[in-house]
Length: 145
Image (cartoon, rainbow, N blue to C red):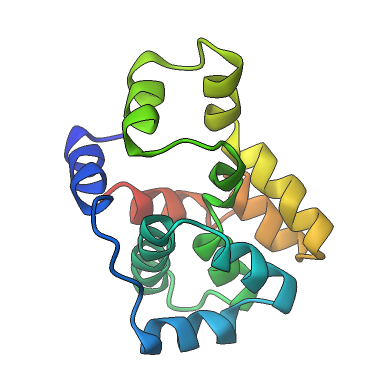
C-alpha cells in the first residue's frame, strides 16, 4: 500500500460526516438486503471509504456487474468486527499481525468473505473480497489511490 494512500485514509477517518443521501441510494441499488445490513454496520469512515473505492472501481471497470460492485463496496467489511479505532488500525498496519487482534485485522478479507457467505452473497462478490478473480487488480488499483 502506498504511504500517500494510508496518510489520506488516516486524515479522512477523523470526519464523522455520513455519506450523502444520493450515495446511500446508489449503495442500496448495488447490494442485496443482507449485504446492505453489513455495509450499514460499518463505521461511518469505512462506509465513506467503501463508496470512494467502489466509485473508482466503476470508473476502472465500467462493464462490472452488480456482484462485482458489491465486492468493491464490501471489500473491507471484515474489518468491522476487529474493534479497532483509527489509532489502533495505524499501529496494526505499521507493526503487522504480531498479536491475535492485529492478525484478525490483517485477515479481514477472509473474515469478510465468511460474513458474505453467511449473507448469501454471490460467489463473484466473495471472490473479489478475497482479492481474487479477473477484477481483483482493478479493485486493488481503486483502493490504492
